[in-house]
Image (cartoon, rainbow, N blue to C red):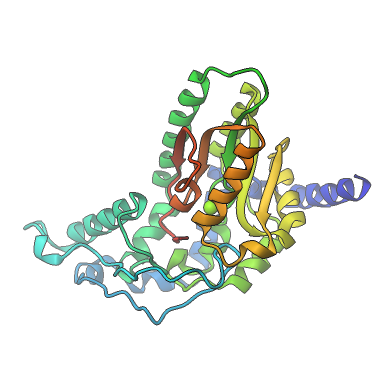
Length: 315
Ligand SMILES: [Mg+2]
């Protein structure tokens, strides 16, 4: 505990130096936007006029990635083209409006899990995704999910035996990696697991504000909280430090991928871990994650809540 306290103290000292990095708030977004202005902006290589030339983008099956978030060698999945809606369906409005609408449609398909596996966002939607993630829309969408989940959590009749559980994912769910993805094209770049692990090791990811409020509400209602993440067991210490530093505490269990889990898809791995939770006598009343692979599979929670994330896909 002494060592833990020292670690927390160091993190708190860092937070005092960079107080606005703890929560993905208006202040953090302001700083990120200011950074964006100072940096060269490769994403703007695709301005709206070029986006208006949209043609369906073929999925490049030669692309590959590895990550601590996704298994290095997942079972083969049928490759489905990640493409924008056909230009043949465009209205007479044309131009930039159509380009925006097509990216809206792509994001809807992404969030509704209607796309096949994809590894990068469509090039034509790079600026769109950046604007979405850096603007109010993303936070409004997060707030919407939190509001609905809150209403549901408060409506649940607690059994009072300490076995009502809520499962949370970590990345883009409790912690935001937006500072990392801002430096890596908001999903336009092919995911680099080694680079991402360097970011994780810093333990400086800010909290998603609406998630932190909901997390505290869930604890206050008496749910037992389980954190189920695709991060590797080797990242337990930095993950714990990061979560503590930005306000997430008092979980029942933090579950990370062990050595035996790395070949499994996220859906299979997380389903197995939920099965173990249920095997310990808990009832999973709610599940909260940014990927469908956080939520699908059996046993399934009574209700699942999908947070927005158009930057990456994990099977
Ligand atoms: Mg996640």
